[in-house]
Length: 171
Image (cartoon, rainbow, N blue to C red):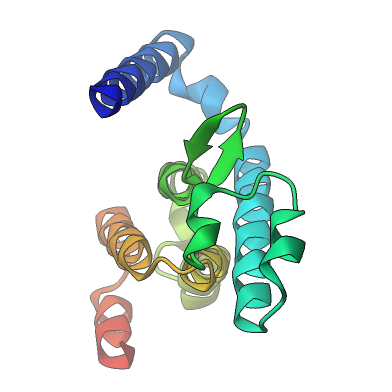
């Protein structure tokens, strides 16, 4: 029953957030994409640092002294933040921020889509850093799903097929 209440609460929150973006307009949201990206990166690197410290066998009492340590810390997974009694998984928000970032980047710079350095390397270095932080925080599944979303975004943006195939050869 408690889990059902939380599910309903999160669904209502998601509907409210979608309605807010719809009524505010995505043009106002895209002005804040870089701020959202930096904030998300800070949170993800914080969780990655906690996970790396747990690998280095830092005592659990020391790790629990860090602020906002989530409930997964008991098992060694640092994917969750606890804020005000609520646990959130920042990597889920990171997926949305990455989508906003790539959509904003390619809509503002359509001429770079065919360029390797400015059209592929630059946006992938930023998204790759976020994916690396998600992976370091101990979530392989979310890293794979978010990486797949990035590949779809690149394909939809219209990058050259040879660059797209290069990633599959490397991976």
